[in-house]
Length: 127
Image 1: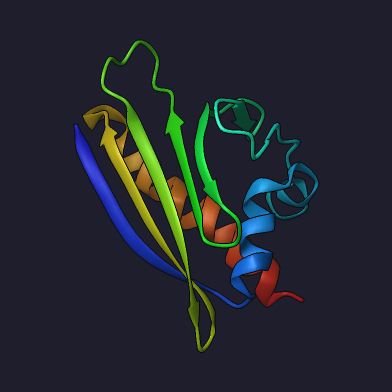
Image 2: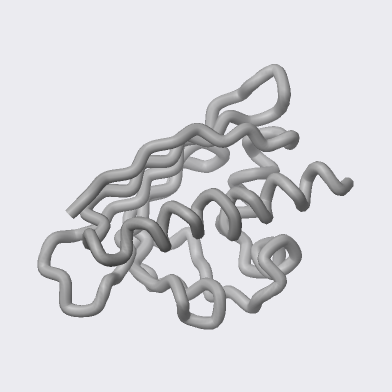
């Protein structure tokens, strides 16, 4: 099991980034895929046509998202925490992802950098 932590700068206000990560219609705009998402703790979510799925744990409007991501039959919870900070360039998104299975680590890191936050950065930079 491995952990991953990284900061991403997104050229938008934290409230906008929060909405982009939690509103299914907005997720579809920047990801290009339908999304199932809710800000109700305990609800399940699905992104990229089920490639990413899990359970929503905690939300602080405009500031924080905590989710459990599912990896097959894995016993240890894989927790994703995204904390949004105001930054002079928009938002600094602090990502922490714990208990990533070793065999999935490189794909997950690439996904965070290229597909998830990469697409979100491209979306706002293109405005």
